[in-house]
Image (cartoon, rainbow, N blue to C red; front, side, top):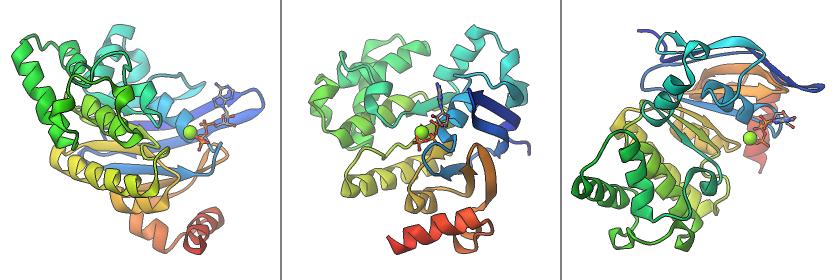
Amino acid sequence: MTPLLEASGLSLRFGAIRALDDVAIDVWPGEVLAIVGESGSGKSTLLRVLSGQQAAEAGTVRYDGADIRSLSEAALRRLSRSDWGFVHQNPRDGLRMAISAGGNIGERLMANGARHYGDIRAEALAWLSRVEIDPARIDALPRTFSGGMQQRLQIARTLVTRPRLVFMDEPTGGLDVSVQAKLLDMLRGLVRDLGLSVVIVTHDIAAARLLAHRIVVMRHGRVVEEGLTDRVLDDPQHPYTQLLVSSVLAA
Ligand SMILES: Nc1ncnc2c1ncn2[C@@H]1O[C@H](COP(=O)(O)OP(=O)(O)OP(=O)(O)O)[C@@H](O)[C@H]1O
Ligand SMILES: [Mg+2]
């Protein structure tokens, strides 16, 4: 087996700030990899670079064996709407607020070639149920939804095309704790049922524990520790990871 996503030597500066400093990570088929670390440690920057939205100054990202920088713009766009998905912290960044819930789901299907209106609508209805949104609201605009519903709609829109690899940046970040728990549970089920590979950025150690097979800990643009989830959380080696884990226990 080879990694689905393979990055090495990634570096990127913003002025004096080293947002990424020689970062290497692998993501294996069917694996959920959590990226944790304090605010400003480079997590979102890493996701943008891994998903081809931003170029690094140095290093390579390989997807399915191919250097993503060697792909044409068109090929990268095609990958972004078929093989890959991206779930943003703020659902407004991942949804089209001016079109209906069903339209948000259907649009991704149409971008991948679906044409039959009845099939698209049926698929949208099925996905609304799957993410526990009342299918009767298929024609409603996302802005009439709660934050948790918007996030579930964004997840449906992302997963409807069956991507292989999904990037998630703090998908539960803006939500109440009780809503977060429900969403995490749903995500865990979907990831398992669809056999997704996921790179998830989170502040939430409990979320990482629940979802991830492996954890990467970042600080100041560097990976300071990585390993299997239980090992990293139960027996952290790096002082910064120890602090991160103990501050959660104390909270
Ligand atoms: N476009 C940009 N221009 C200038 N600096 C940037 C830019 N994007 C990121 N940075 C800087 O790079 C560093 C890493 O930012 P990044 O957003 O990746 O952190 P993060 O780990 O996602 O933080 P948070 O947990 O707060 O979301 C920060 O110091 C940030 O200010
Ligand atoms: Mg971020």
